[in-house]
Length: 214
Image (cartoon, rainbow, N blue to C red; front, side, top):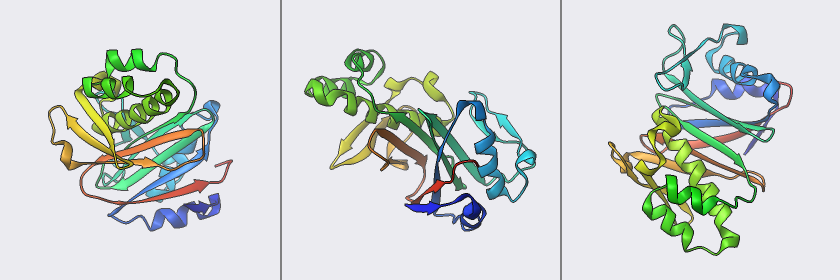
C-alpha cells in the first residue's frame, strides 16, 4: 500500500499506467456527497474539481460526461465512514466496500438471491463463519455487477463466485465469458471487506490512502 497524502494525489494520478488500476482509500462523510470523487477524478483528468461533470448510464452508473477523457474508467463505494475509488484507463472497474457486522439473515438472503452453488456453500459452513463468508460473496458480486454497469437489478443469481485457494474466482456470468473477468479481494483493515472486478487482462492494483479533507 502507498501512503499518499493529498499533496501527492496529482503525482500518483500522473503515473497511472495502462496495466494498472489505482484504488484510493479515504475517510468519507455522507454530507460530502460526490465532492471527494470529483477531487480524485480532477487529479486524473488534470482539471479543476468544479469542471468534473458526471453523467449516468442507463442503469444509473456514473460516468464521465462527453468531452472528458473517455479512456478513464472509475467506480466508487462507501460504507461506515470509509470510501474506495477505483480508476483505470481503457477499463471499466467495479468496486464494493462493506463494514463487517453479524448478519443473522445471511443464509436466508443467500437462498433467495444468490446462486444455488453459493447458497449451498454458505449452508455448509458453521454459523460462526457464515457472516464473513456471506459478506465476501456479496462484495464480490456487487463489484462484478457494478463493472457491468447494471447494479443489483441485474440479478445476483445470474453470477456465481467461489473462493479457490484463498483467491476469489468468477465461475459463471450470464451472457458473458466468466474467464474473461478479473476479480480481486482487497486487503484492508480488520472490519472492512472489499472487492474489485473488471473485464480484461490482469492488472497491477495500486492501493493508496488519501489524506482526510480532500
